Image (cartoon, rainbow, N blue to C red; front, side):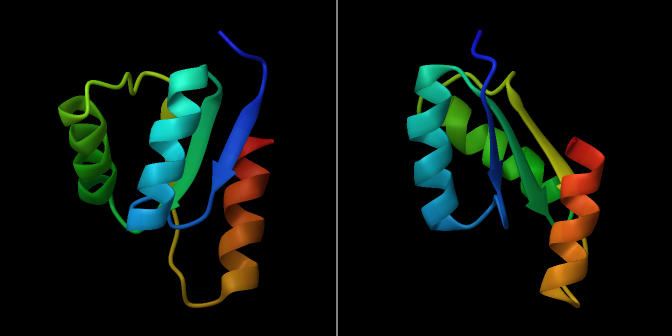
Length: 79
């Protein structure tokens, strides 16, 4: 297991999913922001369908009313 942590803003988006699939293969912990647990579950299912492990993937649910607030809230929870 890697000691690296990758942070992805809006982790359920298509570009971030590609990034997650590539970084997940290398084993770092991946923390992403999403709007709901359902979006996180959807992301994990996509990784599973691609035969990629998702046990290193966690997320923080944030509201994207303010990008600065969303970043601050998510990063504080993962530090």
